[in-house]
Image (cartoon, rainbow, N blue to C red):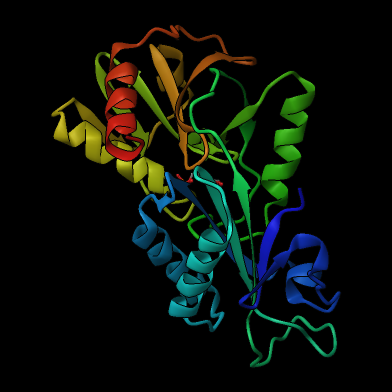
Length: 274
Ligand code: PLP
C-alpha cells in the first residue's frame, strides 16, 4: 500500500507528490524536521516535539507558522488508518528561482509522511565508537545528516546498528539517539550542548529517573567512563530505551542484564505506551 503523505497541507498518496528540484531541501539540505510517534492514535509528547521544531525553525531563520505544522501533522494522522506509528515531518526554506547560498524571503515548504510501526521489538544494539565529524549546531534537528549517514554506514559494514560518537574524546550521542550509561549504580548522560540533539526521549527518561529518585548525573564524559560502565543505553522516539550488547571497538564491562535499565524501561512503557 502506498504511503500517505502531506505536501504543503495537502494529503495524498506519496506517489502523487511532486517536489521541485529547486527546493532548498533538495539543493542545500536547507530544512529541519521532526519524528513524532503515536500510540493508539494519540501523539506522544506532541507539544514538546512542536517546541523543538519551533526551536529548529527559529535557529535556522526559516519562517513558518508552527500552528500550520501542527494542523498538517494532525490531519495526516487523522486521514491514516494506523493505530501505532510515527510521522516524519520536515520544513524547508522553500523553492528557489536560482540556486544561491543567499536566501531570500520565500514561502516555506512542508512535507511529511506517516509510517506504521511497532514500538516493542527492539533488540540490544551492537555499536561502534566513532569520531563525531558533524557540524557544531547539532541541537538543531536539521536534515543535513551526512556526518551521521557516513559514520553509520561504516559501522554497518562492521555488523553494527548504531554508532556512539565522541568529539575530541568527549562523548556526544548516537547516530540517531541519545546515550546513557550506568557506573557504580549511578545513571549518567552527556549534558545538553550545541553538540547534541535535545532528544525528547532523553527528556522523558530523565523525568522517570528523577521521579524514581535514582542516582543521576548530567555532565561531560569520556572513553574511560565507558570502559568502566556496567550498562549503556540509547534512547530515541522510535527505539524507546534500548541497551547495548557490545561496542565492537572498545573493551567494556557491560552486561545486558541491568536492573536500572529494566526499571526505566518498564516505567517508560507504563507512562507512554499503556
Ligand atoms: N540524537 C540524534 C542525532 C537523533 O537523530 C535523534 C533522533 O532522531 C535523537 C538524538 C533522539 O531524539 P528523540 O528522542 O527526540 O527521537
